Image: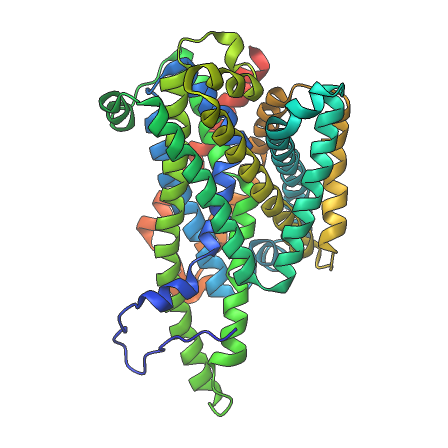
Length: 445
């Protein structure tokens, strides 16, 4: 692939063309999958069904935090030409690197467990009734759904090997499908838009809503995708180094052209992040609005499981709503499970400096999910538990990211300015503090 980018000879930046912008669209959309994964389904639907529109503001502010974090991760990848785990290995001591790796691996396993379960449940909701009617048990059908999920994820990983643009295109299509499904849901439920606007703009928090609000925040800032986004920057950098720098240019000219390309690349990635993260925010908001309008007041039992929410939508809104819900969950699980595997590979290769086959990584991370399904455990409880585990992993990714992007020796001219640094550390302290509240409430409830 050749990147047709006009690198300026002078300091003036050429205008952005749609063709050039499309060339750079994709990495942030891949990262955004983590913000609409099955864990988000669980927290948003429970939050909307129990508390109506009052927690929409949490999604708005969580999205703002996510945009900043993803921007910093992308900037690190563009400025250094390395992933976050690789930078940690290079700039931190060996004991710290091993500690960060263990934390990242725990997060990767918990992430993959939740997302794999979500995809299997999506398959089950779509085709499970047919197999149940023919005498199969629910556990058996879920196990078959998990095997089908494995096959589809392997196909997506194989597509990744053929080129990053093909893979990014499929991920964008899956994200678009999730958005389309929830557009259908919103059309069917006829929400109270005045209450939705008020819930988005006016913060409302009390003792009852605190737990689910923190859970929604914890499900938004996912540690594995912080590692991954820095890796997603590398294919285009590599392509430019191979094809964009003239072979006849001297070293100073080549360095100057690469520096100009990095500036322009970061400018494109800001736009990519704005579109992708705000798209994920709209989908998350649609989940909560749908739950508030359709499931509010239907009773605690109806929302104790994602399967219960799916079954409740049929009598209320018709079979189309059920199908849209199941398809959205399936697309979410398939895309996020694939992204989880890629993130796990970035983690192990970056921290340990080893080559690890991605298909072996997928096989290893399948095992915990298959065990959970075979034991017949409650998927919603497992999803929420995985979010609690992930809350431990956020500092292992976010704090090193802020330390590295704040060092001029690492970032050069791309080092965080004072305003970015203050905003970043404020977000980190807020996320860590709120996740600590989540864990405290979970273990003392």
